[in-house]
Amino acid sequence: MDPLFDRDKAEDVLSSVAAAAPDYLAGLDARLVRDVASLPLLDGLDGPLPEDGHGAPDSVAELLRIGTAAATHSSGPRFFHFVVGGSTPAAMAGDWVTSLLDQVGGMWTASAFATTAETVTLRWLRDLFGLPPDWGGVLTPSATFANLTGLACARQWWGEQHGVDVAADGIAGLPRMPVIASGYVHASVRKALQILGYGRDTVQVLASDDAGRADLDGMRAALSSGPAVLVGCAGEVNAGDFDPLSDMADLAEAHGAWLHVDGAFGLFAALSPRTAHLVDGVARADSVAADGHKWLNVPYESGFAFVREPERLGTTFGSWNAPYLAPMDDTSIDYNCLGPESSRRARALPIWASLRAYGRTGHRAMVERHLDLAERLEFLVDQSPDLELLAPAQLCVVCFRYTAPNHDLDALNTALGKAILDDGRVYVGTTVYRGMIALRPAIVNWRTTEADIDLLVKVVRELGAQLALRPPR
Image (tube, rainbow, N blue to C red; front, side):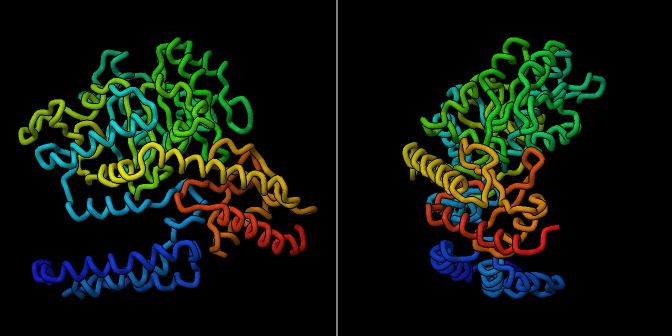
């Protein structure tokens, strides 16, 4: 079926999605986060490629039927498994506008609207986080891409230390770029280095303990060998801890190093007076990465990268010498030339809508509420005789485990993590923290309330008790 013949059905198809949205969204508070009984519905997605097609109304209806039942309802208030927010009403609507307008978002000549929205959004984000207004920035699909963007600029800087334009001539012949981090370094940083040609396992990890805290003396000694890239973590995923960013900024300035800060969710600590001290020093970094689809609560995919020296973005990602691309100026910005993507949605629109809708005070209030909920969870864990807190709750992640006498606690908590996911009332998985299998729920969804935290503890204790009744191994 030629899509042209579906043109007169567009209104009905779009209306069907809009009509399904209120009931779905209203039911998120009561739904199982994942209903394993609905997973056989996924078979309905399979089958041979249709020869003639079923038409838009039937196809979208089928997608809604399967998706509203079998999807993981991560937009709801009890998805704690990963650091993932939901979509606020303004952000979701902004994302619908993004699809409706379908802008070529990376070039001024293709969409002055999309690029202007991105410029304004980046300025608002710098303001929100207290970053210097003259920094450069670009929106990315994720913190992984944001880390890639910042570290690619660091690679360009590293080449300059050796008289090489890496963007033009590559890294062949250059010595390996030293990358130094604490034990909090995230896999996305390693992945970025892997893509950039340095290898994911070349990071020199200098930690002072088995939790991964930074060994500043070790870093100082390593930096004495010459220029290097120092990676700071703002918000470690297992316990929400932070590297001492101000101390690391001192080291970077003293030794001429590039400081990159991975602030995927921890950058949002800047919004609350209670936690702003955790990101002291971030404004002295050379590059900063963060996610939007975490604590900003905008839809997947959303991230942003900021660089102290704005021209480095263009040097690293621009200069294509393509005759059909018009030159940029301060207004006519081609964001394709400032980041790793050449085809980009107008991803600024949901961020712009959310920031305009709720402002600084609304986003601060959300962060403050989540900090309160993390403290509540920490208190409930401390008060429960069968739960053990493994690290203080500094931000929005609480790390703990279930305990039972005469049991292998790692095996017990591994089984508990699977049981929680299969149960579906709340959604939280396991991690390894200081050599122990643990739960590490992250609280960043705008819908989450005290009742959801209380249910989390209830489910963990209930399922843990059931598993503990089995004979210990």
